[in-house]
Image 1: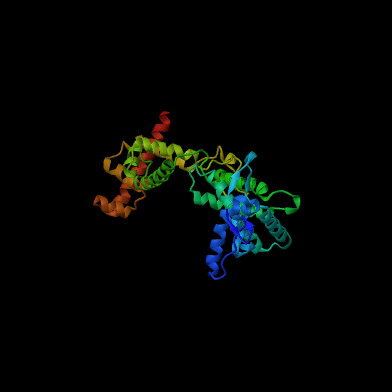
Image 2: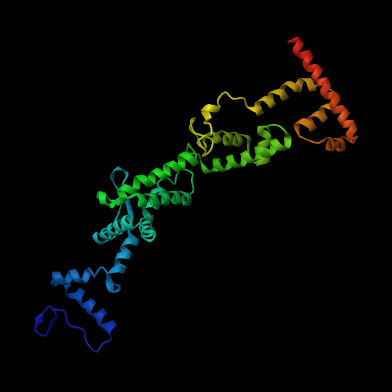
Length: 332
C-alpha cells in the first residue's frame, strides 16, 4: 500500500523537477495503479476526456467522420451520432432551411455520404459498377437534404433512406437491366451487337450465327445467349415515348405500323427466285448494285468492263425481272 504525506492510498504528486511530458506520463501510470481503491479515480483513469487536448470542435468532427450507418427495422438506416452531433446537425438543417446557403448544404451532404454509400452497396449485386451506384445514391442524398424539413421532428436518416433507395431503383428501371444479367453476358451482348452491325454493312444481309461467332471470337451458343440477353435490357412501358419529348408516340401507338425494313426484306425475298433465271454475271451485277450499294464505276472495275456496258446490262436485267414478275403474278 502506497503512503505519502500521511494519506493512505492517495496518488503521489508528480516531481516538479521532471520535464512536463514525463510528469504527465508518470502521473497517468500512477493513477492506474491506485485506481482500484478509488472508484472515482478508476473512471478518470480508464475514461480520458472525450475531446482530448485539441478542443471540443476537433472531437465533434472526429465523431462525425467515424459515424457508421447500421441497418434498422423496416429498411431505415440511422447514423450513430451522440447527442452533441445530433444537436449540431439539427442546427445546420435549421440554418439551411432558413438561408438555403450552399455551403451549409454541402456540409450536410458530406456528413451523410456514408449513408449514401451504404445504401448503394445494397444494390451492388445487380451488375452495375459500385462507383456508378454511389453517384446515383449521392444524387438522392442531395435531393433529400434539399427537401428535408427539420420542423417536422423527423430524423433525417429516416427521411433520406427512402429517397435514396427510390433514386437507385429508378436508375435500374430507366437505365439498367430489367432482369439481373451476369456482367460477362452484358459485355458479350455489347460486343455481339457491334459485330452484327459491322457484318450487316459488309454482307448486305443479316449475318448467320456462325459468322457472328467467328468475328466475335466466341461460340455459337454464347452468341445466342448474348442476343437473348438483349431482351432484358431497358424494358420500357408501352405508353412511354421513345425520348424525353412528351409528344413522341409510345410503343403502343407504333404497333401495327408498316416497317420499311420489313417491306424491303419481303421484296428481296420475292426477287430471289426470279434472279435465278438470269445469267450469273447479271445476278452478280444486281447484287453488287442493289444489295451492297456499289456504284456502276465500281462494278465495271470489278468485272473488267466499261461503265456504259454495266449500265446497259443493268437496264436489261431489270426489264427481264419485271417481265418475270408479271408472268408470275398472272399465273397466281
